[in-house]
Length: 262
Image: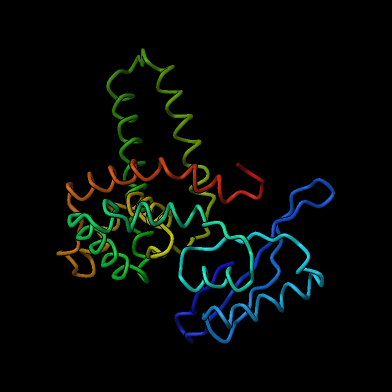
């Protein structure tokens, strides 16, 4: 079970998924994803009983376990439903990495960098086309430089004693050029901010920022945001943080799989 509030209309929602063994096969099914009257334990209890009675008329005779985050309303909900409750492992991992005593949010230097990243994403959120244009120009310049190097090698020796190597590099270059010249479709990019309740969104966020590091700086300069440009110290810290967080990715994927795990 999970609950959240739509940030535009402030409508409270609740979702219920169930895992069952049916004919010796593990199944994960979504029973409900609906707006509710509120996120109080009493309101959610009425909602849950309605959902369960619709799919399991004799649910009171079935041994049920539920998994929720550690919010007080969810804990009380389990008590009201008389279900055995299991802490959400992914949520516990999120708290460990972001909220606990030595979590990401407790390190002042990281908070400064996180805020800087948020400011950059906010400034460039609707400037994806600018970043894409800069990436295309950079790729073209690198390609032209490689072509120029090959021309210089060929001009340097009329007998071309290293023709074999040049041919190999030329073939590789042609292979790289073909998809570029054949592709006329332009994809729109937009930077997304992290989600405060999902630590792995921070990892995805930093991966994207690092992938477009130089184009982002150029785009910031184009719109006059020179003070928000990343420096080499920011780059080094972002790479260290990514290396640290990626170690927890496998565990998050494990508990998110549609398979029974111990």
